[in-house]
Length: 136
Image (cartoon, rainbow, N blue to C red; front, side):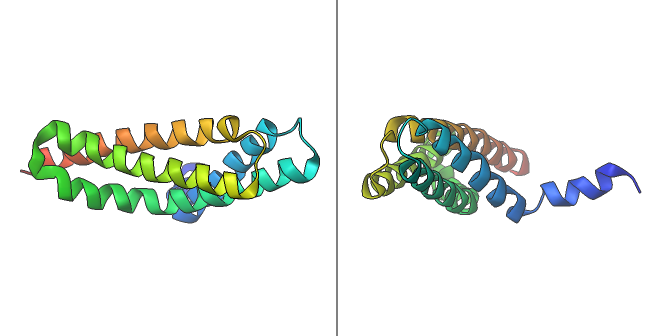
């Protein structure tokens, strides 16, 4: 059996992406807060990992729905608005939840996840716009 035939279905599964987001961004939050007592760094990691998993789960569907809604507005609106809305909402959720959890290093904790989500949202938005354009 070819390795790619085993790996490809696993990489394409939503659970893989959600788990990867939890582990990667939770680990990042732990590192960003490592200079603080262990309970604080561990709580920040759990909060960020959970939020990243949930955001990963919702972001794709939200971008698809918003892309459809803004597509009649032309390329600029159709490409820019969906990621701007998704990023604003997800970053706001990160800030509010980390404030509630009393994460010591909020900016450092959310910098990487917010950057990655904006990059993903922008690339996927362009892809959706291009797919609609080709189909038309």
